Amino acid sequence: MNIEIQGSLSNTTVQSAAMRRYYRLHAIIYDATRWSFLWGRNQVLKQIPIEKTANATFLEIGCGTGRNLDQLANQFPSAQLFGIDVSRDMLEKAAKTLIQNQHRVQLLETAYPSELPTTPQVILCSYALTMFNPGWEAAIEQAWKDLPVGGYIAIVDFHDTPFKWMERWMGFNHVRMDGHLLPFAATRFSAVHQSVHKAYFGWWRYFIYVGQKTVA
Ligand SMILES: C[S@@+](CC[C@H](N)C(=O)[O-])C[C@H]1O[C@@H](n2cnc3c(N)ncnc32)[C@H](O)[C@@H]1O
Image (tube, rainbow, N blue to C red; front, top):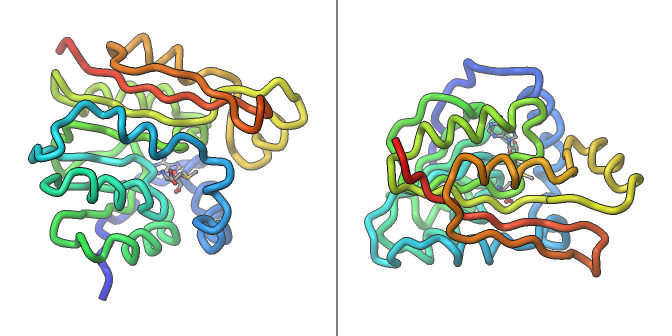
């Protein structure tokens, strides 16, 4: 038995259609390969300033195979968890990963921005926003609107690389990697945590950002 995936994908865009195609194949090898370069995913979760016992609602935009939602389920045993993704293939993996927590997990097949079923206290974006091309600004703006005052956005993603060939290779894989996300997120939210780290001695850098919505 799996978690039922909800949603109808009525809001397909050129970007989300490209993602669906890309992850049709990559969903198969995703968990076996991505641990080696999606650095900082555990660290960003540790920076979320919510009580372990809180009844909070978490939403992950671009939840993929459910790896982070699974960690969140362990970290916050009373939390409600929502995952949105445009790729059915990725969500089917997530539905299997999260089966033990099915009573408090909802998975939605939709392209963000889209209408949410609930108001989350935390929106997590883990290695998703660098793939929103176009659309990363609109997604951050929408996350700000979707959060209540006092809510948090938590982002971990690629930051930049000194190597042009790496930037081109990542672009070929739908990832924009030129330091564009962090400054923009920082204009919308009040930083609770912000750090930039080297991966493989500087091959590329990734960032962790947790920001709070402090005004309506
Ligand atoms: C690199 S994966 C990250 C998956 C997961 N967050 C993780 O950290 O392992 C990016 C995910 O974002 C999803 N995605 C891309 N554009 C999206 C959009 N507009 N709306 C919802 N999900 C999207 C992709 O389908 C993919 O599953």
